[in-house]
Length: 60
Image (cartoon, rainbow, N blue to C red; front, side):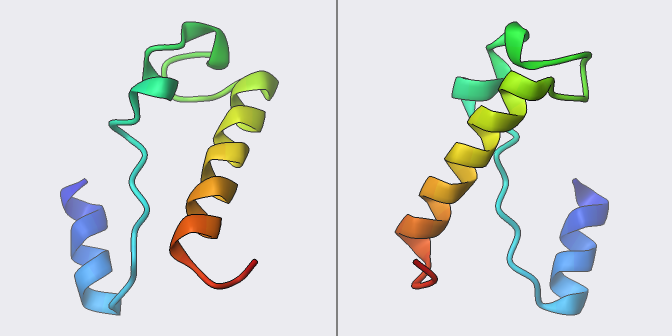
């Protein structure tokens, strides 16, 4: 995360960090392995991201 923060500051980016989202990280059935989601997890993550975007942007 330190590397990501450096890039964020350098390039003036906005980072959406779901790494502590307990609705995802505590659900082993959503993951293929420790770092990759399976198809069900990807659908849930995409829904969460869509909801976040709708709440925080004016794109929709």
